[in-house]
Length: 269
Image (tube, rainbow, N blue to C red; front, side):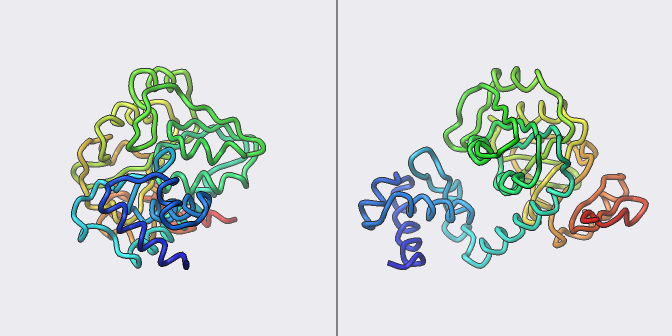
């Protein structure tokens, strides 16, 4: 069975059942669990479902029309890849970092193999797992309550754990960036943890694909002015470029960075 056909069947099955385990899909399709895990990772990248331990659940969108088409999903995955490539040029060997939960930050984590002697804090289990094989990174995961939907740790224990540290750069991924409402996220359970992350970092670098601009999610993390920098894709709306420039927040939307004073150089040099 070709991969495209497997993905079509898995989409239909998860859409009907709302959740599924790797084992049951493997039995249904007669392929290995390793193959199914790869398929679920691809569908997670599309935003169709959310990976969980041992399986997956349908993404929060109830309306099938709201789900991204294959073309839209591929475009957003490519944007995340480009954003993560830009972000890597902001990270130096020996840096102390924080990565909030999110697919773009997971893409950043996958590129950190290029860097040496890092200290990385994260409350995202997928990011921690990705970094477990890093040859020279120290990965710190605070305690807390595991949220099965986001596969992240939250709550008072997480906040207490984060308060023990201070990092040079926090990469904070959000679900909405809006001129009036600032930076927002979907899940209230994560809000206090995100706000603590902002307090424990010298540089607050917000990341997001162009799709999050001009969007307002449920919980406000902070105003636009709370950012040190924003890393995104060149397709970001022009009015946001102007607002960030006027607020003296550096925008990295390509390998050339810009702030209020104009071009400040090519990151690859």
